[in-house]
Image (cartoon, rainbow, N blue to C red; front, side, top):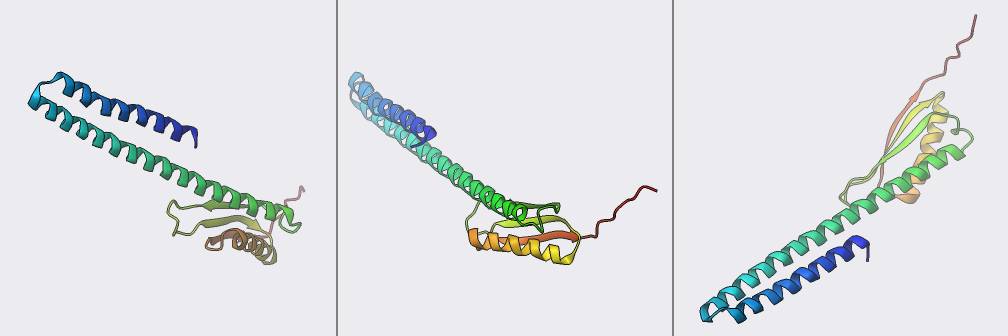
Length: 158
């Protein structure tokens, strides 16, 4: 159990305990008909706190899912970047891979590869490396190619 979930549970248990104990004390002090009113308001308060607890639990769960998806995207981005840096043909090229992970599971992750390559062969090598890594880690991901083939011009001093 994470620290946030533990805090939520302890706060919720305190609130529920106070809610359940409060109507009993009011009922003991109040004469006849007021006791049923106190019980009714106690039940209403209990329902409200229960709904609040459910909403808080759902919020924590959604945050956890988002965090896990972001972590998966960062792992894929690191894997692709390492593959580009480990290959001798693409190591010196100014290439960057960025992974965009949607919140909802059915939507595919998007890997954007951008930069410049001096030849079409080096561009194809880089895309092949990216494709291999993406298919191994996240088969449903889409790859966007933004690599520009531009021969580097060398400026010489006259």
